[in-house]
Image (tube, rainbow, N blue to C red; front, side):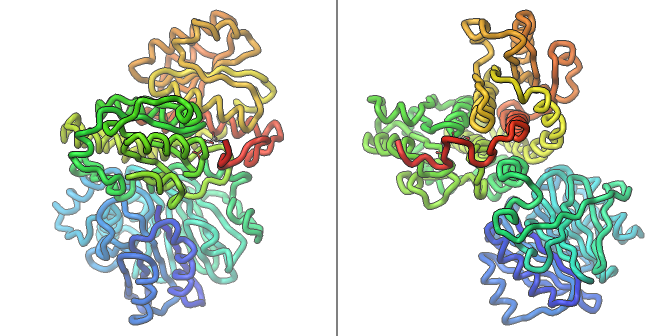
Length: 613
Ligand code: M6R
């Protein structure tokens, strides 16, 4: 994830921006930069590495001025060098941009601009934005139109800030998808913007949060928000409380809600710096994989608990399908007391958000003592799980405070997909062409998740219909079977509603006896090779008087005639579809819990990190 800060006003703009960036450094720290506009000229300072290098540069070569933007970067495209650090400036020095997100189609856009004679200064996807804005301005468009035309060409989720030397008192920002928010802080004859409110909270409590597909023109005396076609939008100004907990929740009522909506950003960070979209390869250096090591491994065992276990069930499908490595998934609490068949030819992958779950650590110690190569996918860096492992992949989810795990689930799925790609590369099961196709799916993912989140009102409406129901059956098949189990777990833990997650094909072997009008069925019926099978299982439920809610692919014209309620998700590549399909499950459970008046972030009897047996 990257951090963005901007300021226009009487204060020293570089100081405001640097102070804000310090509070956002947790979002990325492989390079940083600041641009100031003064006397019709941009001055830029950029450094690779942590923010303190930029601070040193600014001490040696200070900047002054009253309009500035800054950025702290977590690399997605291009190495963490000074040349790739933001802000980026257009070829003729007219426009400066900072950006958070992924421009999925940057390769064709860059090729088009290069063919027109634009010389690129960096390897980033961001640079196409600044060069496109300049192209439109040079063609005679006003800055606002140029920004709008540029955004219309971008695919993927992005947050963008643009400044032009021709418009010295104005800043434009836009949000496209859910790459992370933009908070606009309103002051007295001054204005601020930042990726997250703590960066600017010391100056103002009055904030506007830009929604997806909105852009804003910022001037000292206020801001004007429009949609991407330029139609003015009415926006609400939120008064942010000073206490740190409320401030951390920002515009959201609960941490769980915030964390659900944080997923596109979290996924971008998880992918960041690890994927070469042009060559179709993935690299995971912290896994310490060598050809000898990978060549020696004959099977993989995934060990985890709760949501992390369900994530592992999806990971098995990904790893077996892409890397053809036999994989089993075992509950840590079972593994630790079994007599597991583990040796030097076994790799064991633990998945754990906290890195401190007692069962998972005990199982890992047992596997390690039997000679396994130990890997972990973990969110809490420096945790015990990392210390026990030979290699790790960080989830990059950021702090997950709600007890119900959400973004750790989706980011760990992305990590396993990337691991599958790396193992596939090394085991020779993935051709370069297939590699390019696999990583192209990753580039789309933040935007697809963002599109699913946009259906929030539909999930809230569904929750208002079902919040008094006491039993639910969740069904899915293939990679979506674990999604059904995760959906049921979410409902159980925060709403205290009994829910079972089942592989749909198993329904006829028992659970079908439960189905009547009081036990609704929540089924994942998205477009994949098992679609027809899911339709026939939905019909079996309907034939027994069941009420069926389907998570279906947008545009499916058949499903409405088969079930009682439909919520839609965008079509995703089959192995990545669980990342998108779980969103309705998370939001449905969240809204049901809110309706029932439950304590969403701290449900009864549970703990975020289960460090006891
Ligand atoms: O920190 P971990 O991923 O090891 O935690 C595992 C489970 O305790 C955790 O996923 C739990 O099931 C969550 N409450 C699920 O929302």
